[in-house]
Image: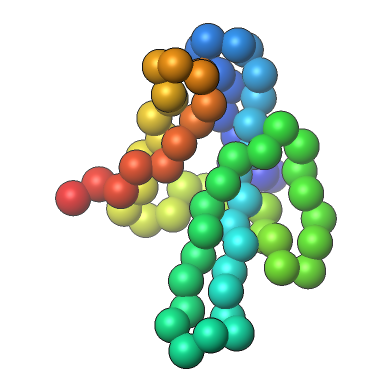
Amino acid sequence: MAYSVKSTKSGTTYFLHALRNNSSAEKSTLYFFAKKVKSDKDIEVLDALPAGYIVIESAQTGLPLLKRVK
């Protein structure tokens, strides 16, 4: 089951995805929310939040964002 968040501002549900860059010497991951579950060979739908992150909502746009916890 894909991890989802419902916006309190708009009521829209967003699903968490990860785009992994394995081709470069420095491996990195880009996390993003989308309105629909995307299926692609490079994009992974996540079932849970990554360790060390929390979800916050932008006050201006209502979009969910991941924030790293210290």
